[in-house]
Length: 226
Image 1 (tube, rainbow, N blue to C red):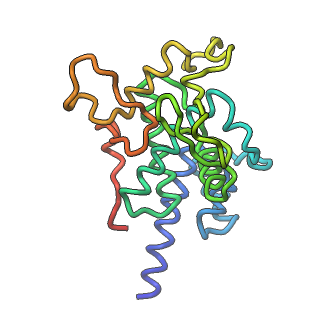
Image 2: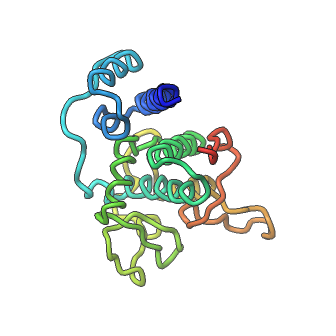
């Protein structure tokens, strides 16, 4: 029985590693989140990705998450992650995977580029767990955004309500713009947007805690039995 359990556990770890590789995770993430040897992971990476893994250290600075567009993307992902943590009994890395899959799906549905990589998403969760980053409610819209710890909530205004002067002026395809960004994301994670509200009512903020995710994410089955 112990031998059978070991084989099943290894099969699940290989499946998890393959999923992470397909999402673009760095090899260091696979080493951290599985018990597979470096040699096996390296062979698996080359077989699945068709190339050698990128070398170099993982991004470590929290500063990237504080800039305008990255902060919005990171906040959207982290709200999804927290929601899944509350409603599904998943291992931590599986919660990261499913939240990131849902984030990518929403970006595609809204015609936006997924600025957040799965490695940065994984690192973001680690930062939050270690108290290096947190979430603060915007005093204007009520959405919860990634911030430095101990941010004063009474005075905090998010980058969507108060964007910097040059925000959204770039020409990159799929980038957020000040005029359309909030409207696009507002429709991504609406909370019962049509129930009990008059026609034309403003949709719920996408970054408000407790959001109910739309049918577009139904294929991300919540494996509550694991």
